[in-house]
Length: 307
Image (tube, rainbow, N blue to C red; front, side):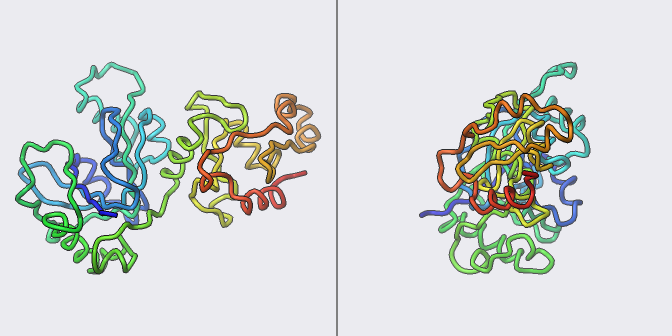
């Protein structure tokens, strides 16, 4: 399989904000319009350059996922990893780039390109863009990472990442030496959220609710208790169901049935709407590798569920 890399033009404010954040696990390289992104596969290298006249590659990351989200939900998922200090600041940039009315209170749909293992090169390590880069490019250009300018960029970036302290960016030895390869994206909380949201087709797995602001990506086994940021450790749930799932008042069985604890009624003298769902089959992704992990479900059934 041919491996590609991409060089995208970055917003200077986005770059300056993020390069000041130590040990950043992920970043959202967003576009102000709701444009689908299909230029890379997960694990390929996403690089970014500054606007002219600073025609240098100044950083990058491992491309993990792309989708389109309302800017408020992109902020909920990534926060300051959107390259802004506040949602208001992020909205102001979106308005500027879209040339929208500053009084528009709409929740703008934006393109999200999720990068993991982001890195930001110090000034003396910036990589000049190739001669093939045209000054007319305003978004991005892809390259074959195995030949020509693409290979030269790959080698230049890898040589800098192999120099401490930059080696923390792409840690896999196979990615830093030899021919270009796909790099395993290490998903963060934000990437987990957008991935699970899309894999469940933006519907609650239990109720089929489609109001996006009312939905949450829930970890079956919490990250802080040994779980991972992976689709198979996630469920898309309505926010109230997420809360009682985390508290152990409901669970999902190994055969994908929704189960409600008797403790819900005992503790709160309520819960009729949840008991009405008891025993129903939840929706699961078509992809086998994204379906709820049986070991994670067993953990929730045995350790978290109140019975």
